[in-house]
Length: 432
Image (cartoon, rainbow, N blue to C red; front, side, top):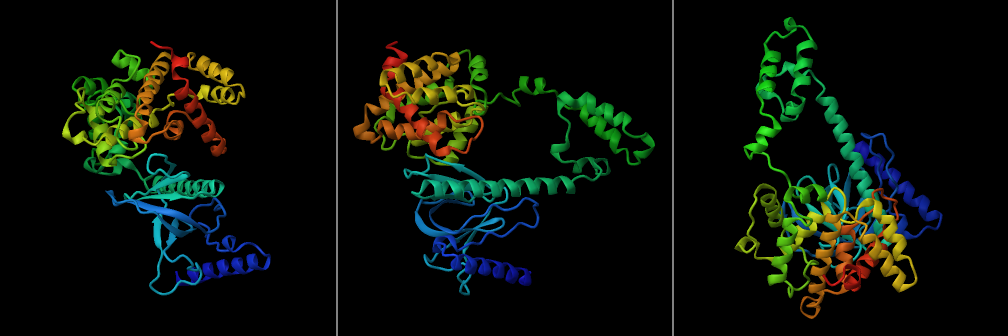
């Protein structure tokens, strides 16, 4: 292990010397990208760089956000944060070890509601640690986001393949009590599985009677319909298609969204940074769970006293829609509409597209932007501007179906579309 480490450091030092001789900038010579021997895919080259970092959660426990400038290095499966601003990667003193973040299984995504700063993305690890990384240099932070996400996805994929290989042993050789839940039969596939168990092998091979017990267990499992009738399994609200949810509720606007807007308008319009400030994530998740499990919800209870929890739940609802509030097929038409140089033509093009949306999408957008108009009416108190609201809701309400890699341009158009709808809300939706 020590030999391997020395060898790796040697490669890094040789790379630094080579880069120095070619006259490259110092910030581009401190490279520490180590190839992953477990995954055949080649690592994406990435240089060490100074970024702004904030640790907001440790082991699931929320921490006070404190931004610091740190030297960030990407290793084979880890991010390394160096505390001393001029600390050399290849010249670490004993005891000056960097903070390490294991990227295996980590989630990497852009965020606009965790900080008022621009160009922020978060890293959530499987151990409950959460970090924010930020830089004013947009191309640079995009490079870090894309490379870290690619590394995390690659490691997760390799882990799943390894798990599949390790779990490929004969399932029926285990005792029934040892069978994992993931291998249990789904009710709708019960008949096909029983058929396979009947004809996959002779009964003489089933020495311990495991196969017959498994068949009996599968045949006695209650159906999905029975579980729904008993209230054990309930239809979700978060993550449900908007049209499906509205049809189920007999409305064109989700009930939960209406409740949240009413509560914000009742006691939150003057709250500082409304919709921009993040609420406690654990409390938001608790609210989400109750919405998915219960029919009645009282947002006036003391546990929902923080209005930012309610606004955070609203944003989470829109982010988790399988298809955004502005459907995928409308993304490019809206972008083309916003490119018009004539202001009146731009508004009319956006208005025409909005009235072509499915009824639930149209009515929910209409209610949302009229609600946001009320938020803007109290901008002196809540310090929220048209641009601020557009930055928050642009990537929350619309995104392309296929990531074209042009994120900066997409974000600009998303924000501009939100601004046009906010400013010309009366013209687009009328007075009714």
